[in-house]
Length: 90
Image (tube, rainbow, N blue to C red; front, side):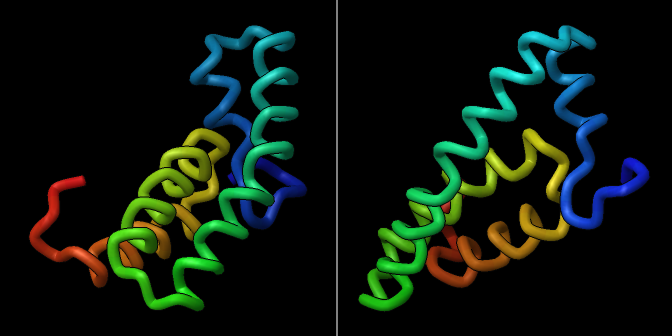
């Protein structure tokens, strides 16, 4: 985990963009803009107890969280997805 960050590791994203600062900034901004609606979709699916929607939303959110090095969130989303469709290899 990078110094000063509790939930994300920016070094993960920086490695993914091969050190390109412009790409890092662009993907960081994208992350900040797309995660609130992703979270809202997951919350709605959980509220409706829609197993397929929960699995889909948690899978999509997991990939986004992994990109910024949010390891704990990624693991929780993986666990949520597995609980909804344990035989699905999504």
